[in-house]
Image 1 (cartoon, rainbow, N blue to C red):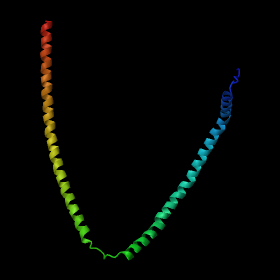
Image 2 (cartoon, rainbow, N blue to C red):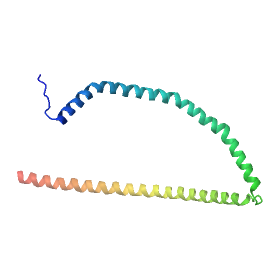
Image 3 (spheres, rainbow, N blue to C red):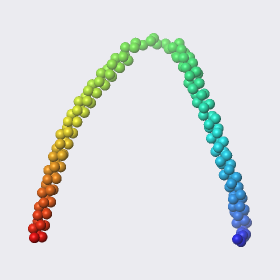
Image 4 (cartoon, one colour):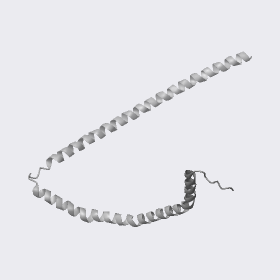
Length: 150
């Protein structure tokens, strides 16, 4: 195998870069694998610690902060406590409207089912009629062909 020596400076630099790239590629691939492995190890190490910290914040710190903020809000609130009757009335009205809606839905579902049964029987009757007409037409054509053949 004969080696080509580039004539231009740019060609020589390109050839040198290609040779360097071929020598460095295995080292770069190895570095990539090692780095990926180290990142995965770091993730395995960090994930349980982050989860534990999140649970600790949720279970210990957040309730304390919430109680403190609620107490501060009650201290600075100038309005007297409101009556709780209004939300109960709204809730009961919502339950009543939901119950009526459910009853209407059930009634309409039953009517729709009955209508679909009627439609299905009409459709099957129509299909039977079409099948009989097609069979009659086929018999007529067959008899005409039979008459011509005789």
